[in-house]
Length: 379
Length: 247
Image 1 (cartoon, one colour):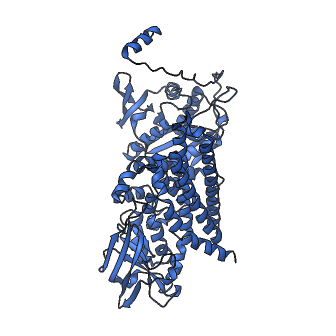
Image 2 (cartoon, helix red, strand yellow):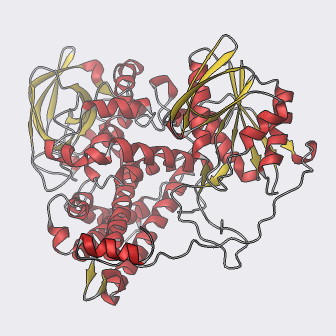
Image 3 (spheres, chains in turn cyan, blue):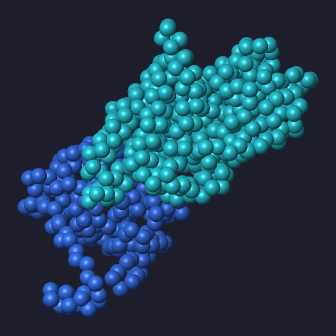
């Protein structure tokens, strides 16, 4: 779609990613969904094409880009495979690495980032605990200093790529109550005292999800990310980009739902004519497309504003809520248009329908987003 | 050894084209444009030869509007070393393109031209052959394999009866067929680097392209397909075909 924000380089990039997704991802999605994970080789393949290091400095094997439209295009083209799980799986490093890149020591950055961007290792973020999700300030996983190590005790849950990840950026409590007592540690999955169990979920099947257990897990102090008790700053760094990425995913999947529904409506004949010629269905498609266009337009505008140095927190919250609610609506209508076929396991719209809720819940639940936006508006 | 690879900006192969209402051509308004797929294959072939140490420089050339720079950059991102853009809004026909390319081959002192066998917009399949004739170079068209060694190119080409292998002395013009290779994915870092690769703009007025031109009289849609008829048996089918004088 034409938009004032896209350059010929964006178009060239989109074209290449589209071709890659069509030939090397889409044909395998259902088998990866069934397997509950993506093959590690896919990380390496993406790394070869420069897709893991978008926006990262060259010194760590990344590719600096001019703006936030490159990651957005990558996410939306991945969505064309009809799976949000693939975005979550390949995207775990996108929330695991930024705190390390922004706050970590040079040695820690060199230790972790190049291997992750090369697809050799997988990075993930571990914040949420069994006792609470969006309420980061009250997390309880504890890290006590013992000589040259931190001794970590506690657990984390709903961790994307938690079963496969090699490195976790973990929020732990090193100080007193509240956000002033939180630190970030880079913890390797091979550490003594670390274990994990897989979780089954409604959607995102090709991305694994885990609960992590830290039982007197010993972590060298040089794996502290940034300054002790100032970890919340590192967590916050993810927020804006994560909201943009989730909104991009919601819009990307919505576009697929519309495309699939249109194709089905034009092929499927009922009462003597194609579904698309029945007013009740064609008007549905128009409404779906209209809402999608609005969400995508807001996404592009906010991507541009963030690129230009703004931090429009309230609008980013609204975007996340609007885009994810739009996807919930569109995926619901897509399944409805598909009728019985849409209820069948393995159809693209059925898969996406099961992936709508995670976008409204993860990366800041809609209710938390609304409340934050209200406070930003001074209400 | 220097290779010249001509490329053309054409309507993307996925686009369902529409004939303009007045029949003067195809509606290009808002239509996605891409590099002619055969030209991508030609450039890929040149780049593979460069990676094998046979060719030392790959120069991509396009003749077209200012927007054709996008396609030139795309082929620079694939790996070509530099680009030449002959800028014009005029519609360029095969003989004119061949004359421009012949002039550029001389200026560049190129040793081999690897071109797509045809562009998917007009499907003329003429420019490489005309270019070889103008340069008085040997030609090997519809290549499905290219080997260059000791001043000769060994080219396997697809012909109606199967495959034929030709040996041509260099310099030569080679045109690429579909099965020559599968063009690589262009990596993001290479897209970013392509913006800084050298690209010369050349005016069309520098070339002598005053040749008789073909005139397009009209463009029309192919006739709509007649609906088929279901038959119940082979006998009925044969009878129907006989009836229409088809067997």
